[in-house]
Every structure is written in C-alpha cells, then in structure tokens.
Length: 203
Image (cartoon, rainbow, N blue to C red; front, side, top):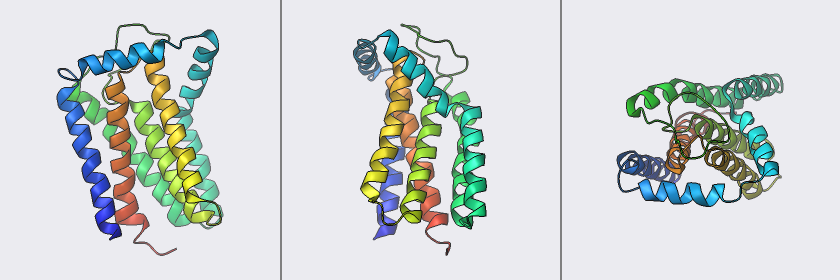
C-alpha cells in the first residue's frame, strides 16, 4: 500500500512538472502575470527586507553549510541512515538543477525586480533546494522525534517551502510556474529516495 502511495506522489509530481514545462510559454502566461501582480501588490519596505533575508536561507552556500552541519550532527548522534538520506537528496538537487535549467533556458522575469540575480529561471533553484531540504528534514524529524505530531512537522516544512517560493515571486526573480515546477521536482526527488533508500534500510 505504501509503495503505491509513493509511486502516486512521484507520478503526480512529474505530471504537473511536465504540464508546467509545456505550458509556461503559452497557456500559463496569463496565470504567471496575474499571480506576480497579486503577490507584488503587497509590496512594502518591511516585506521586502523580510523576503530578502528569508530567501538567503535557500541560497547555495547557506544551504550547503546548513546541510553539512546537520549531517555531522546526525552522524555523531548515530543517525547514520538519516545523515545519508539528507546527503543523497541535497546532492541530487545540486546535480540536476543546472542540467534542467540548461534544457529549458527560460529567462527571468523583467517586470518588476526588487533584487538582482543572474542565471536562468526554470525551475527555481531556491524553491527546489528549499523543498528538498525542508521535506527531507521533516521526514527525518518525524522518525527521530516520534512523540511529536507528524502533521505539525509536515506543516512547518510546507510553510517553509511556501515562504521561500513566495519570496522568489515577490522579489521578481522568478515566475510562479518556476516555483511550482521546483516544488514538484523537490517532491519527486525526496519521495524517490524515501521510498527506495530510507524506508528499506534498517535503523
């Protein structure tokens, strides 16, 4: 039963990713513009400072340092399975991002940028990294802190993902479809390793 559940999550994730990849330059254009206008309609100096600060958490170097620190802590606390799970998911994120971005070569929005960044747009690297990191850490936390509600842990993980994804749209450096595709990609990667490695290796 669990096997079917994980396969379903991966299938849905890839399906939505492909729909977005096919449609972002055609039937999803208006969707992107409407969401950007809606989110940037809340622009304020305070919100801009908040989002600029929060988006740095999913930056490549920040994520790498955080993952290394958490991996070392997990290893020394004898959670070797969890440490390797985190390394596998985050390493995959780094490997596939540049590859996929170079396939689509989508340019970043030019509508209203609140910060300047370089590189390609689809899918969002920050959102992919955040999705993979927060989901992986959430699943690890559920298994390590078994007395804590798994729904609370997953809620915190999902909120973290949504905040990072929203920050990229608010700052004008990504289209909504970039972040949505990134979240789908992140769910696929984490579910794949959770199913094929984490659930099959004994503690």
